[in-house]
Amino acid sequence: MNSPAKQPCILFVFNHYLGGDGGEGVVVKNEMQALKDQGYSVYYHEYNNRSFRKFSPSSLFTPANLFFNAAAFMRTWFFVRKHKIDVVHAHNFHYTASPSVFWAAKLAGAKTVMTVHNYRLFCLNSLFLREGRHCFDCHTARSFAAGISARCFRSSNLFSSALASSTMLHRKIGTWRRKLDLIIVLNPLMRQLFMDIGVAADRILLKPNFLVPTLQEGFEERKDFFLFAGRLAEEKGIRHLVETFRRTGKNLIIAGDGDLRGWVEEHAGGNILFEGQQSKESLDRLLRTCKALVFPSLWIEGMPLVLNEAKSAGAIIIAARSPNTEMLIQDQLNGFLYEPGDTGSLENAIRLVESKTPEELNMISGRAKRSFMEEYNSPSGQVITSLFSHLRIMQQVYSAGR
Image 1 (cartoon, helix red, strand yellow):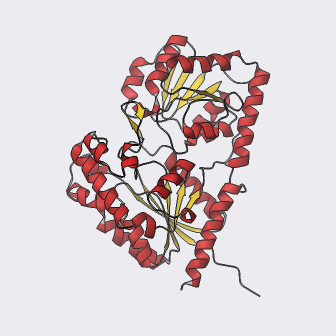
Image 2 (image 1 turned 90 degrees about the vertical axis):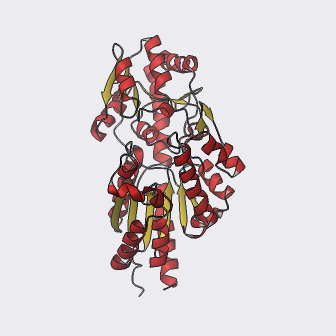
Image 3 (image 1 turned 120 degrees about the vertical axis):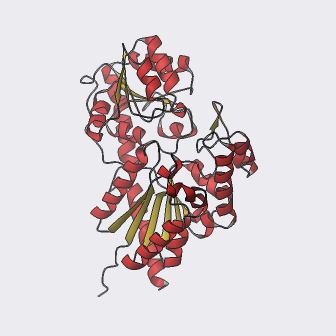
């Protein structure tokens, strides 16, 4: 009788952002826990970008580390060999971990997986957004010249040139094509971007973020306030959001933190309440009791975790229109869409929500909840099963090659 196949031993790599991890940190924890629950052995390496913030002895190596971090290479290689790691799964390597972790993993004999949460490999500011408009100039030209000229990374020609050079170097030497066994993307746009630079389609897996569903409140029990939950940054559309609610007088709670915290605190008051960063439990409570979540983001986000959290809680979503929100939300069926950055369009969407009866809102809420349960639930849904299947396939290939 055949013995059961060994579950892969997986090393997760995550590089923390300077401005906070947002939903990515939550996704990493969720996936690690889901894999542990299925019997996988899971290890974790984390990095940070403090050397980019202020000078220290380690910051002397920052420019070189952007291209290839020798310390991260050695750490990964030794760990893979010592613990007999089968799969190295990086959720973010910018900037300190660097692509060196993939080279180290392959040299040590592990399979490699990368989950891509933003567009950094194709756009220097990772947003496809410049001067308030969607911009694909660098990807279309297959050159970062436009982004360097516009100082798209850290508002600096020097930093923009360094990031562009690093990204193009790894594109030319085949890091993404030859050193990654699987690239996990969150939406079809990401899939196409990688195919455009020569990555084979069979090495790209479309797998949206997943969550465990939360309890849902009926709209007879919900309170009279709208909610924004997220990072306080220009690209998140916080300015036109606040302007709209100041004009309408409708109640708005803002939950989050970021570079525009001071601006938000200055403009809050009256019908706009700023609550700051919230715990998971507090955010769940706000999503279960708000009239609607407003998602005013100006850029084409990868797979915003807060939208799945909202749908999980049965919260109605009012979202700025983009290729990705149009896939997640059917206007006036399971949510509402408006034109990004347009205060009048957002005001009309708010007015539409206000015009609905509790029975109608419950129907819209129910459709949102059902779409979440069908597409993004864990761990029994198709999404997470797909990930497990791919990891098992890679392990079979690994075992066959030993």
